[in-house]
Image (cartoon, rainbow, N blue to C red):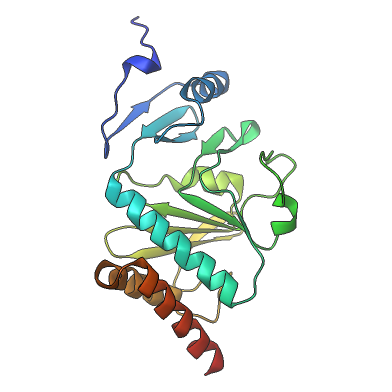
Length: 215
């Protein structure tokens, strides 16, 4: 058996590695060794660990989509707290994952001023955002953690997964924003950002939300 230190492994942007037969303590040790100041993301479920390094394209889309969600919440007067790519994990579920972004909305008060979460005590985020440019999201971990809603963007398409009876169902509508055509709007304004830029797109998005609410 050959032992390899994580520092010896280089993962180029856009690539990922999969490690099998990783028990929980090994997973925790890997998190410590990787540290928090890193560009890589991890996903762990049932002893399978994936480590990925996102492309610049991934990061650009992530920032814009996160900004669109924040504008949406703001215009609808909904309180929220974002914990970004914090590690969501539960040993009893053998699941751990770092989303591209996550939002506490219904349970936002739990997270005010909080820097660490314990999902055996705290509620999971109400909404998780994933950008599938580098790799495909393994949704099983989020299902085990009981995240109510997951948005996955991939190739100009937004998939909305809503948790129903502890299973994810693909939906055309968001549980959090049931009265808005979220899928169509997010894709339209994301494309707009490629020509107008971020600032103008967010302004146009605010105008669109107000027009829909007043109609």
